[in-house]
Amino acid sequence: LRAEIVRVEVDKFGQVERIFRTTRAAVTFSLEHPQLVRTMPRREAVEAIRYRVFNRSQGNCEGCGEVITWETGEMNEKLARGKGGEQSYTNCEFLCHGCHQGRPDSQHGDRRWGGRKQW
Ligand SMILES: [Zn+2]
Image (tube, rainbow, N blue to C red; front, side, top):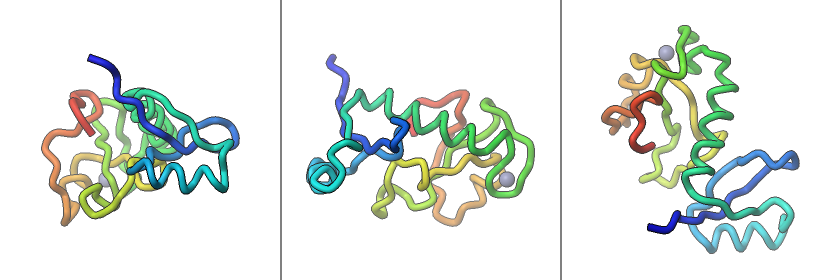
């Protein structure tokens, strides 16, 4: 089984900002910013975004400030992918279980980072 390769936007330091939803989106963006588009395995891109969001949280829920860990925190997409949201550094937040489950549009099962099968 070959790894799925995706196109991503990186910042000037090479850190992954987002996974493009479509090839067209990536091509359009690359016309303006060819140096900021890379290809990599999807798994690698997802992990890179997760680590960045986790680091940004500094171990505190980005909703209520409660102390959380890599194991207890959960990833939330502010704008769901089904509604056009991207897998990106800015569209994702690291939340405690209470905040995550309290989201009105939450459609998540268990998306804890420790037991993550998918995100
Ligand atoms: Zn919270």
